[in-house]
Image (spheres, rainbow, N blue to C red):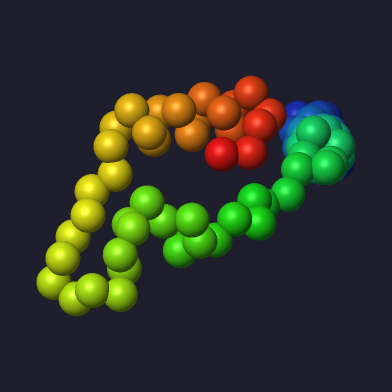
Length: 80
């Protein structure tokens, strides 16, 4: 067998092995990083700022200041 072909096959197999090891290591690190992370349970329709949702044709907008207060409260660990 030609030494150049053997060397090429050895390098190719080493690159393939390094790719498999790198992929499995990255998958393991990603899985560990997401341990304990879950999707929020809040539904987008619950707690809407619309006061009278049953009246057709009337649209009530939420105030920006109220929304910012709710966001700050949630970021600080409080509930609305």
